[in-house]
Image (cartoon, helix red, strand yellow):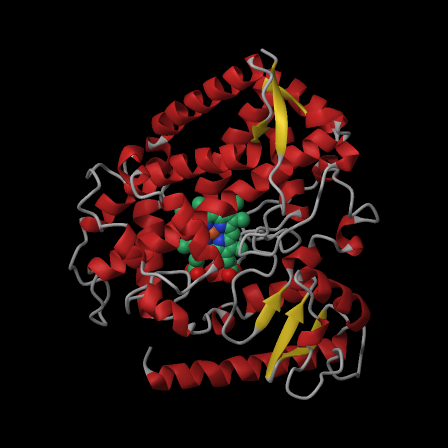
Length: 438
Ligand code: HEM
């Protein structure tokens, strides 16, 4: 971005931040008081107050200090947002001002100098790539054109579960569902599965999510040449190869296509698997909801209950509990918003999908009570694809099978511990015995 424009946006961001803080101190609960927050220590600021699950620590701090709270991450001041009203001010009213991402040095080498979408600063380059993705890759017709490929992968998956059911085997659902989801999505991004299986991409990506920065993906994924050129995302991007994408002279070159591909793969694999695991786990824990869902799936009116189960899962188990980082150090704690009793009533901790009956809350970032995909211009561009994949897999898992826990374990004994990685998965894999029920 032009340095002048960058400076201007920074000044504007600071101005808006002060305006918002002033507005809230005048009109909010703590009328007349300065912005509250826990007292920072020298050098480390409030870092000592954050546990391995920082969204939870921030949630408890916000209960004490308010829905907008100042903290210090070392010497860096940050503002933590924990209510739908304040989230709306940052993500809608002043969206563009807070839309940039911080620069992560370590990512420069991974992306080989050319960034993709997810970690790129807000500006003409990001806008052109996002526009291209929305208009060429994530269109309804493109997603629909992969329905037969999704169906084929799903049929194999169901067959393998049927075999496990016949043999009374316990299956590692986390792993199986992760592989299925990866196959569905990678088919769409890279082309036919056989080709990338050779590179063990799933494991490479998992490692990347943990150890961002220690390898160059291109070494492991001999770029492009290995893939069949069907109408997958890569071949669509290749139609633009070396073309100028905006009047600033940015070019869609190989590195740019590579960076978008890395973004899509990293952003899609575990993100879609985690909600599936959590949803199935909650359904096993709540046979009442499981039965209700199985019954409605037998009838035509299946969509609504499935939607409600998914919304309830995404309310309680946020894949990115604090969205992706924003340059101006705004932390929107969507995990805390999902547990706000003022929004969800006192049974916030309970898995109760029926709370969505007669509540017209959608998942696309317009309703700030539930924003698992973020909101505003940085909203997740893959959300429609993710919702289609997750619903399709969940419906099959529940419609075709009952699930029994191994070793006579009761649902209440299920381990609900979260693991803090970029996608907040369960700490331990979910294992259960499928019982074919068709
Ligand atoms: C259940 C699955 C998913 C969830 C919960 C999810 C959630 C999110 C969230 C919270 C953000 C950040 C929004 C913000 O900062 O305001 C994001 C960004 C992004 N997601 Fe997803 N995502 C999912 C699946 C996918 C899939 C399937 C793809 C692509 C194939 C994808 C591609 C991206 C990209 C490229 C970005 C960066 C957007 C930007 O910075 O402009 N996501 N996602």
